[in-house]
Amino acid sequence: MKKIEVVTNKVVIVGTGFVGSTIAFALMVSGRASEIVLIDYNKDKAEGEMMDLNHGIAFTDPVNIKVGTYDDCKNADIIIIAAGANQKPGETRIDLVHKNTDIFKQIIPQIVDVEKDAIILVVTNPVDILTYVTLKVSHLRQNQVIGSGTVLDTARFRYLLSDHCKVDTRNVHAFIIGEHGDTEVPVWSRVSIASTPLESFCKQRFRPYTKEIRESIFKNVKNAAYEIINRKGATYYAVALGVLRIIEAILRNEMSVLPISSYFTGMYGINDVCLSVPTIVGSEGALRQIELPLDETEVSALRRSAEGIRKVITELNLD
Image 1: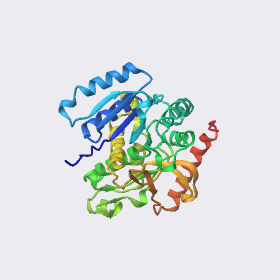
Image 2 (image 1 turned 30 degrees about the horizontal axis):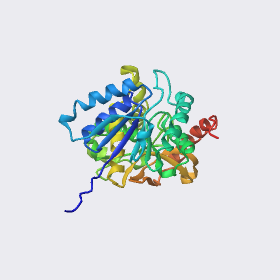
Image 3 (image 1 turned 90 degrees about the horizontal axis):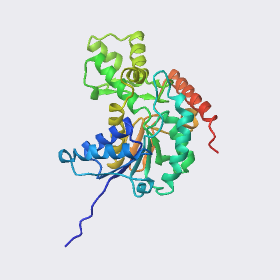
Image 4 (image 1 turned 180 degrees about the horizontal axis):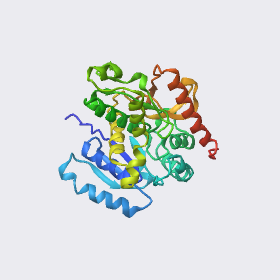
């Protein structure tokens, strides 16, 4: 009798706060993972989340959900880091950097002591800087360490464009690049709907298209997290779905193009930082960054974004 090979997809989530636990829920419902391991310094919190999730397994595909330690990172396909201090009302993502860098310096060595082949996906803010910290502290390959980057910002951008144009969000092709934060860059020059440039599409749909409208849309994209945090204390639903999309691309080796954060080695004249640009994502992580034909204004803005991140990085002790 032929032996049946059982394929397992193991995902470890470090940090079971709002974001980590919502990622676990989205992943459970999706059926993409056969094993989900929850790790948190607050074991009671992790156990509570595990119990709550397990009670819903009767309604989903079979999945083994358990609480573990860093030893359970062994043989993981993806390790998601969602641990760290939360962004508070009035606080920028950059304000979090020193607190969360110290936390990551404790977490990362414990992971790589056990597992050196998994893809590490950083979600904690400031995500670009912490992706860089993870890469430098772990000494893993550049493609292995990625951040959720501007996947969420891009989704917000597409939603607001679709709302303005009165068209399905899935037909809007647009990217936010650079930092996941205040210096992020909207790529207006490449926005299209059904292969039609945005301005032309707006004319066909009798929708206004002005500088003021563009500024208003981008302002709402950039400030979305602040507005949500002011109202409900944290953002977690949309980011969890964005992370799930990255997980799917990795586990299914999709070669999908997603605006994740990864290490720059010269594109647009930018080096030694982690930023988001459209990137081919598969089972090996970040396979190739895509160099968009940006206009001069967008290239300058992307370089300013990189310089802002680099300035913060120089203040960190990563030697």
